[in-house]
Length: 172
Image 1 (tube, rainbow, N blue to C red):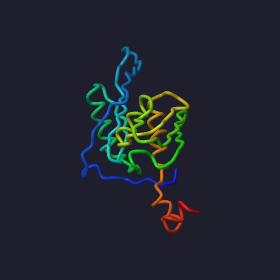
Image 2 (spheres, one colour):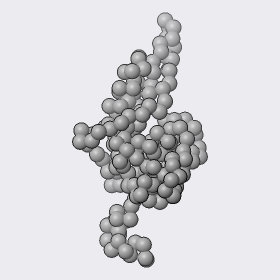
Image 3 (cartoon, rainbow, N blue to C red):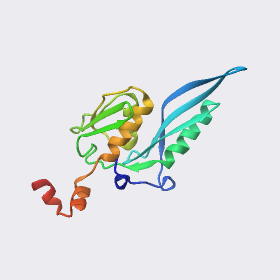
Image 4 (tube, rainbow, N blue to C red):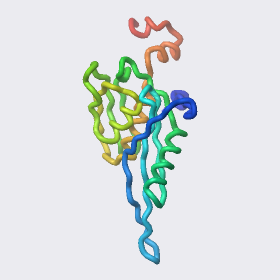
């Protein structure tokens, strides 16, 4: 993943909506018995091309969610969206989680499951075909989906990187 491709965004400038993807109860076994804590993975976005994810861990569920939201606001990225869909097909990978994201025709909707749906809808993508190919672990699926979204480039960015006119990108 190219570092120059990530477009960081300040969270204070925009109104973000948060979505809880999953909560896990984690047990730590000690001499005195089991100690339970919770981990929550949360996705935030403005539904207009900005999305981020975060992980929060705490003794209480509400604290874990709050920590996850704060972490997600620190990891926001800008996603190129053209006519409500992604500009091109893209694969994303993180650990065992692999995802495929394809552009779709207007009116298709978000055809994605669970964790991927939360990320794509928070980003503001209205029409997309998506498939989770590897692990179904929500942590890995969310991170793989964000990886795929980070790799997306619109035609203007490609033209700028190549140093050519926008028409040359389409017409060769």
